[in-house]
Image (tube, rainbow, N blue to C red; front, side, top):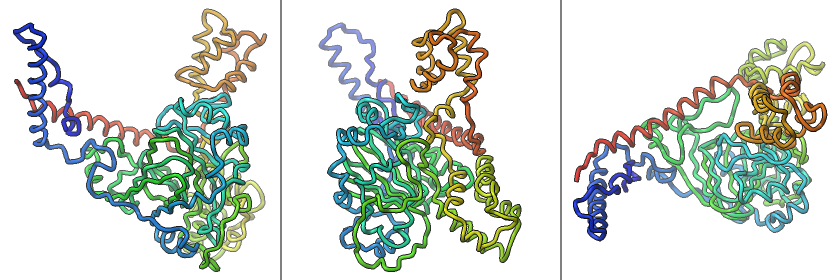
Length: 540
């Protein structure tokens, strides 16, 4: 009770100085005095001015939670699934749907190691937004399945990746999605594997998604984005469809975020074999206590799909036969989290119809529409490459041209607007500062040359935590004799210029402002506990 009320429970338990030296009397009196202190503090804590639920985790912070909707997938057609849930943007749990996938029965750790072990996946820390990035033999934030599945039960690593194409043969497009506009709107396939203990922040994703659990269980909490004004959403880059709340779900802070107490929520536990439909931009928080394995079907966020011929149950189909907008072969650059090309086409078409009736110049088109959607330096560069780099644009833009641009144009625009350095196999080049790493090496080599072991120790240790693969490449470029590197070589080499790559989205100040709010909230939480605890000075 004391802890939940924000009271320091340690100080009443500290023994004082007593006249007697009898161990039995001392222990008895200490215990009695401590219990009296706890009782008095517990009674007094009920009079504190802290809002009810302050400091408690999401799900215990208020009494507005209700069980989420469930439905029988065998009684749904693609049309009824769309009309009841997708068009109304309503989350629903579909029990046992994933049990029809071959992967549900096949995908053990040993099976994946044997059949897909050399394919590469993206890694994150188990706790979302944690600054630590896992490192493997092949890179920072990336690993082969074989290495990941060997280490993930003991190390702080979580596979959050695109599904490599060779694994499609073990997955199926569910019958409720295998029709009309839904069947053609699949943007990407993601895979999630952790050994338990993973926790997300309160966040939202850009796409519709069907999240199917193949092993373990996950606890979900959902918050409708219609309550956005009370959720305290972090500032975002123009054009971003995802995002997160500044509220810490581990300890809800009603001092800094008072309106959050008014937010209703729903909850559900998803078990192995179940699927969950989650609408686009719908806030959620996920926790897993045990080993779990999931795949997500991400499809466009359009509110209108062609449902002609979709009023019958139909059948599932192997994922190998399904058109997917973003495919990852298992090596190279991923496209995880990229916007849907179809969504870009629909939005630009809508804006063009709304604002123009005929032809417009390229400059007018860019300034009136594209610049409004995203004006970051990276996007401007991507627009140049996607549209202005060849003759596809011509001298003008028209509705007819927009409707007939090939999918590659829309994919290029979507990638320019949503490129994530973490998708790159050399992600550490974006995370490690060139000057800092070069200076660290020069400092280490100031008195004596560095052999390979000492060189690798500098690069793979804190604060860089670089990968062995990149460290070996660096050593090979810098060392003249293949055995050591000197201070002079480190000072003169241009090998470090590959670090500190910048993908400028114009969001540096934005991240700073978000972090300032988060830090203030943490301090407010500490202050609320200290101030209320100090107001209860009970002397025995």
